[in-house]
Length: 195
Image (tube, rainbow, N blue to C red; front, side, top):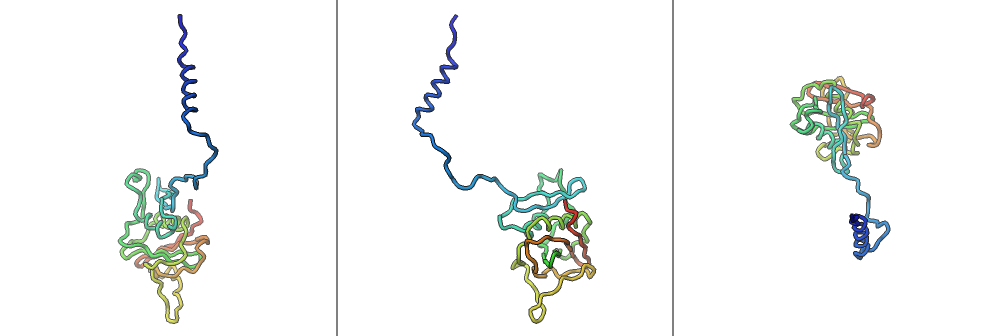
């Protein structure tokens, strides 16, 4: 009976071919930054089983709160609707964002009904999770009083707020309260209990 010498002989022949192909060995070759994949640019809060849940979304590197709010009001993707929902309405226009101290005021377009506590939580936690971007955009003109003074943030009890209050804080600071205003209503929520 003959013994097969196939597998060990094949391995030796394969190794000889690989080393004889003329490709020199080399050390580590520097080729730039390591691959990081797609990193989320913003976080938005949707509803899952009656609770708030942070969901990362890809966005440009300089994206901040305005981008996050646009994505939030667009709602979950069609493929996510079995696990995620929203209590926020679809908007006909972009919400206005104003910052004063540690308070962020989000002014909703006319016709939006008073938000539920869960919807207010979605907004407050999304605001707290994203950079504020230091200045209002050109789309959010800043009104001024005679003499160039900026208007004050209206109190929560007065109904509709002026959504164009200028940013007067360091965008790196923490947001303590989010005030959401609409036609004739205003609700506030602290960001302390955001998941």
